[in-house]
Length: 190
Image (tube, rainbow, N blue to C red; front, top):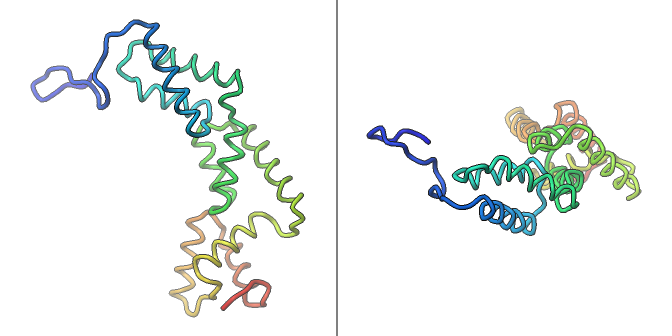
């Protein structure tokens, strides 16, 4: 509880404190978790943290959220590896591999799970028959969609494009290589 203006105890933001039985609390957390995982894929840590946040006013919510997340993971309802693959596929369409991996780690995905998910994604892209790397094709796609394949005309435009692509996690060497390939006609340009 946080102190209010007059020194009285004030509840943190969210729902008011409720006095309910531990069984009802567990039921409410399970029901909420079921709705959450039905709507989208969650990592185990993310589900646990969100349940703790959502039911912060309930007594014993830490243990209940831990139990619910653990049991859902044991049942295969929540799967960190499945979440990591989906999350990375989505992020790798718009960002560099390093940045997408860093975001996945921030979501609570372990290093081992992250490495397996990236290996699966790499294997899938190799099966597609593409000779160029996934990272390179993502960089080209982002550059083509944002800058319509136009090479920078001056230093100001070069810096603008460079900052934009760097903010997506691409190294400056990769960006320069992209411009060189575009200049040589290896990438479509206007």
